[in-house]
Image (tube, rainbow, N blue to C red):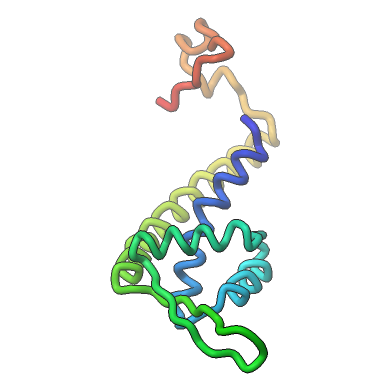
Length: 144
């Protein structure tokens, strides 16, 4: 497993969810979204944010309005559409369920590590048939 690639994929999946949450509070300027994401230690650059905002708009989840600025050109402020709000509610429910499930697995793993002092007995964690048949390098491991 490429850890860096897995981390990138996890962040991508969360980014859209976080952006919808930020916009759900009211009109927001893209630069303010970047600042909030950065302060939450979710690193994202404009080159990632703007295409994502365009995709969310094309999907009907958000809209924008132009507001005159006293210090330069007009600014584009993003708002959630009704579809965006209902989608965020569904995503939020999924997040809460997944988060609780993942935490339960992590907690159980931590308890197991503590109980075994960090040394899991591999023979106990696999069935005899699994031990007899090693995986080939290009064969995925079964999650069953």
